[in-house]
Length: 183
Image (cartoon, rainbow, N blue to C red; front, side, top):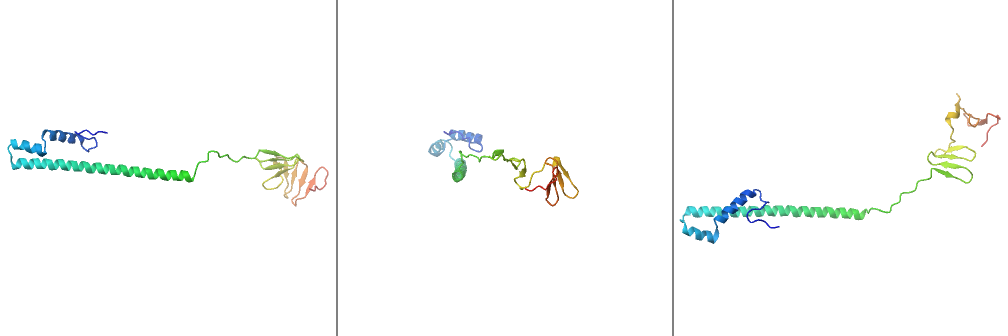
């Protein structure tokens, strides 16, 4: 990008810089300025004024160079920091790659049927035997439909669906036949 010889947009006060640049082209310094001064009345006051203007111009150049150097240093520092961060990200990606062909584990079917007529309800964790007896697969206890159960005061209960009286000591009696039920 070409920078205008009159003013640069990166200077803190570019309008002032432009005005000083225009004024400097009207009053050349160096050898040309010295030759012009020889025609005018040469005085110490005039020499000191020109020297002061030259010193100010050199100081302005020095200040602009320092600002440009500071800006360049910050830009290079930012670029180096971004490069370092990108290198760290690349290293993490390399160490922990994304698996694009990942297949999640299959879930169990909601019902599994066996050859003997029994089945397992994997959603409710209930094993239903071929004779209709239901067992909770988590606890191993028989599942009893509480809507068809009558509780007794001594801890016993009557299963009205299957007509079995469950005594508090674990004994089971068929209420229709009156016989003790064994496994």
